[in-house]
Image 1: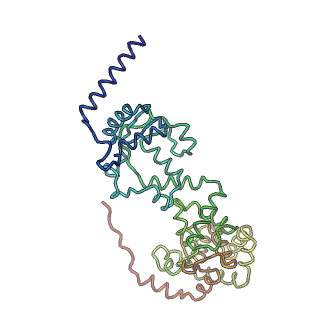
Image 2: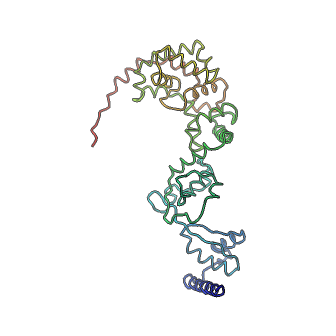
Image 3: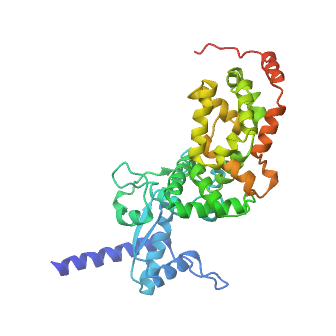
Length: 364
């Protein structure tokens, strides 16, 4: 029986070679100038590296026929070949540069981590049979099997890749994440040093808003900026302004000038929380009616990371001189209170009164 099976296999091999030769003809392996062509090069390269499995896109099927003939002609052991469907663009056409396809090196420059790229690419047409989408490289090595690769083409989703990179970034050990972001902030000229307590605290405060390493620049610059005027003149800022914001500002300025707020900030988070509680009792405010005006007056924004952590970092940056490039728009706490004292509240109120109310439209 074994001899019979071997004879059948040998016969099938001969038939396959004849089909390949009849289909492909006498194809070129060396150019007239002596330079070897792709199929010859890749066969020799894979064979000398002892490649056991060749898994590539379906568009390489014609090349596989040629390469099997070269393997046989040179007496190399034949690897196992597998062909997978192409990665598609959102319009389900072949992914190309016009869809944003780029090199691996450019993805690194854009702020993507190697492990996130490997994780995402592995999920393009493959899954482990569960709902899990987050895998380390070691987990992929353990779980991956070619029989779970889909036959249909997978669509490359840039938003999904970005999300996955954020998951991998925040899953890094804290020391590694601090090192990556600290070096990024120093290279970008935002910070003078890439390590230290300021970098550690900034990383912990801002990491949830960072999906790509390059996002760190914008997130840090946003923390250090103080767009108070544009916030107060915006439609979204109007309700905050109308909630007796000048009165809150007056009490806040008094707390800063007396040294009370600065002393609280020197005591860290515990000092800040104790002061906020006391300030709320003084103004008979709590919850959103207390924290929203404080956020606007101290950060110049309606939204952002934890307010206490933000103010503590801004205070420390002002007294320690952590900031590198003055052109990033850093406004110290002293400068913020100077701007608050010079604010023309009546002019802001008049500006909003002069603006027409938005007209409601019926939806269909």
